[in-house]
Structure formats: structure tokens, C-alpha cells
Length: 327
Image (cartoon, rainbow, N blue to C red; front, side, top):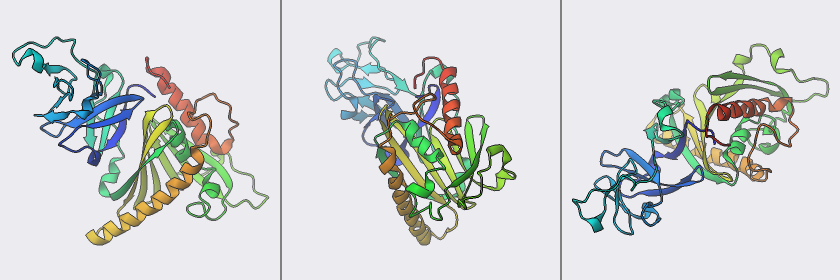
């Protein structure tokens, strides 16, 4: 994973206020809960005393109680009370586990994965989506998160995998695509057309007025949006579970329909469409080998794969910039 980044790890609705949740992210088991102010707390899910899962315990006045011997952990991961030693006994500083910084907004929960001293104030989000309503789904994919991300950067596969849905029209010839990198964002502009047997695909630099084309945007480390139209967007967060598993959160955003009952119906239909399209992708992506992508690997990429090529280059640059990180 790329170190020193804010990663979306959960949707807010998944974390209830009355009990802790055990999750696996970045190959690490974690306990997540809400304190008395509903702030999201996250620590390693392994008691420093006897190694049991802390998420099997319960929340006591905003702190987490180990189910085995009642040790009480605060949000910093420190044990603040050992019942067997008595309430007035000082707890050694060594009695602690790793804690993680979190941020919550837009119905999502982020976690800072990396050096706490390098934490940035607030994670990136496509804030214009605040003006939209949405419906969403969650799906588990048996691939590294980089493969799931690359599927959403792949403009070549659309007329084949999605022939019955968004790929109708047999637009197999790929002009470009044009890819623009700005900070930690990649925006790519798509112009797929039918192959008449005579037309030669345009190179990225040959595409004029590319800003007017259909486009998609990825922001590191793990969120993406598709500009379907001015009033309809698709959003995704690709959450790394471990080296071979990813949770994909897909949201269908729209601001076409605002009347409450009709809005919910429209959003529901958008969610159903998202499920169909996502499962078309999943059926093929989970067969890819190796399960994790890298800058240098045994694949023969073509011009139409430019968004994937740029993603791999940029991702490797970010890995190299962050000491102590790994792919």
C-alpha cells in the first residue's frame, strides 16, 4: 500500500454507536468504535495482555473493554485500567497497542495509514458531490486493490465486458485517451468510436478540445468518480483488505430528481444499474494474475491503456517518496 495517505475504509452507516466493529484493512485486524461524542476510534485488534480480539468486547463510557480480563483501552490505544490491579493502580506505559487517526465526513470514514507526524489535516473528497443525493452498494473482490482501481481506468474493455449495458454501440476503436495529472489526481478523457476499418486511432496529443470529452477522475490513494453527465456521477472507493482482497464501495450520485419519494426510487434504480455493471467487471477482474499490479510486470500494454500506465507510474512515485512504505 502507499504509505502516508488517507484511505477510505468504511461507510459511516456500518459503524454503530453501541458496539465495536472488527475489520481487516491493509492486512491488519483492527477494532473500530465510536466514543461518547460519536468520534471514530481505531486501534489494533489484539489485546497486549493475552492477544484476544478487542472487538469482541464492549464499549464502556466511550472506551473499549477487553472481553477476556476487562482491560480498558482508550482511543490512543493505551490501557487506562486493569481491573485485577485495582482502579487506583498506575498502568505501565508499555500496556498499549497501535492506534490510528480517523476522519469522518460525507458518509465515509477515512484512516491515516503511515507516519502520524506526516498526517495531513483532511483527506481529499470530490466535494461537489455534496450537491447530489446518492444510493450505494458494497462488494468484496478477491484481488489486490490496485487491480480493482485499474479496472475503472480501463477504457478498452468497455465494449466487451459491458456489451449489454454501458458498452453498447460497438465502439472498439480507442482515440488516445488523454490523461492529465494534477497533484494526486488523474483525469482521463475518453473518445471511443466504431471501427470503420479505415480510421487510425488518434494519439493522445492529437486529440483537440479534449476537455469537452467524457471523462473520469481518480484521486490517490483509493477514490474515483465518473462524470456520466452534469447531473449524474458514479463514485467508488477501493478499500484494501490485504494483498489479495478488496472491498469496493460504489455510489450512484444524481441531482436530476429532487422530489423525496421519486428521488429515492430514482436512486434505487441507479443502484440496481450499478450492481449489474459492477458484477460484469468483477467476473473478469478476479481472474487476473497476478492479483496485484506493479509498474514492471509481464503484461504487454497498448496505447489505449495509457490511464493504467500513468496510474502505475504515479503510484510507484508515491511509494518511493514515502519511506517505510510497501506495495
